[in-house]
Length: 117
Image 1 (cartoon, helix red, strand yellow):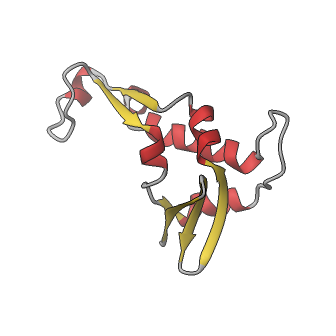
Image 2 (cartoon, one colour):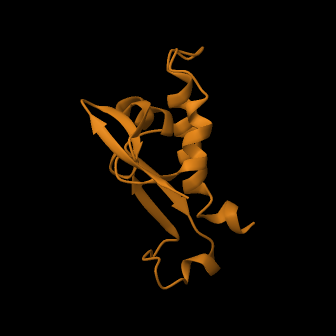
Image 3 (cartoon, helix red, strand yellow):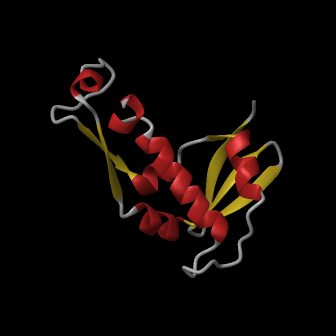
């Protein structure tokens, strides 16, 4: 399965793979939808003991802007986003941008406490 790499041009995020380029939306909008520049993933006691997880307080803070502009995504996610338009929805933001941000949060949350419950 191919992966799509982020490409940020003039503040707009695109996901790119092998000549295919899908506009996602303004990085500033994505950061706002997620809730700010950082996002905290909480881990339970068992998850916190994993050797790869360096946290003393059971939480890991992610830099949203950095992660959004560096994290690759599977073709399946991009295919679902492609079907959404870039017209503004009822919140005044493109539907595709809002859905990307929601899926991004789902990916982050799947790593924490909710994933183990």
